[in-house]
Amino acid sequence: MHIIEQLNDSHIFQLHQLYQQQWWSNTRTLEETHQVVRGSSFVLGVVDESNHLIAFTRVLTDGIFKALVFDVIVNEQYRSQQLGSRLMAAVKNHPRLQQVKHIELYCLPELQTYYQQFGFGTDVGGMQLMRMTMR
Image (cartoon, rainbow, N blue to C red; front, side, top):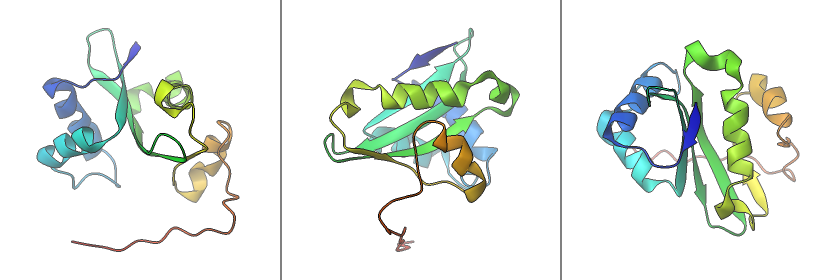
């Protein structure tokens, strides 16, 4: 298994299949999956020996102040193999993020402990997530 930074069409199809298995992403279309990959600052995937995408995350960043991690996803069959940890280490050490002041993500409360092991915390200076729904 190794990390890739470019997804081909087959990988994007496999990512779409991974999205279909999760409650938070199962309404995404294949075209939206293509758009998500194109619109991200960078993407990281883990592929197996057969070059099949088995884990993924993506990042949006301005390169200096903020980076936001999205869509950390690991195929259920591989979840005991520390692939999420490998992705988080790859994000933290990525050359495009070496000058970034804050790397952020949002997650369900039950996942906070998991992300704390990578240095994420819940103290965000009293900030709250706000959302405007556009469609």
